[in-house]
Image 1 (cartoon, one colour):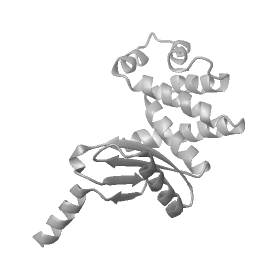
Image 2 (cartoon, one colour; image 1 turned 90 degrees about the horizontal axis):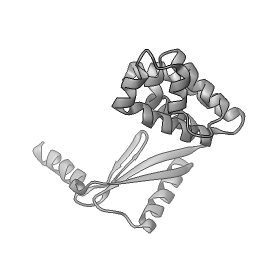
Image 3 (cartoon, helix red, strand yellow; image 1 turned 180 degrees about the horizontal axis):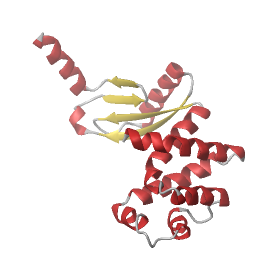
Length: 175
């Protein structure tokens, strides 16, 4: 995977630079996410590696309806260089670059049960104070946490789950 990221990084940077020139980062983000999702499908991967598939057909398959010409040229460049398999990594790196540029922290809140909107807003406000940036929250439910939540915001992980507390207590008692 690290080799894929190494290969994808210059493409992601180029895509981000191209999208920022005309303020189209959001539309490129959506289009790259779509292309990455399509390219990640095993049936599509087999099709993309087929020698009879032309680059134009690959672009038509991966570009969304109404995609701008520069994005189509970018996907065509990936096809020319046999790098369409890197689309998931390129899309992920593109999102990281976009979040950094827009000063947004993306956080994933995993709780034992669905959290009320007020509690999510409280978590968002706390993270905004901590990081000094806007925060986008993605939620997930994991009943094995028993209670509480785990917040994953990039390099920072805050484990406030009962499962995590029990594991830390067990570790302390074992020593």
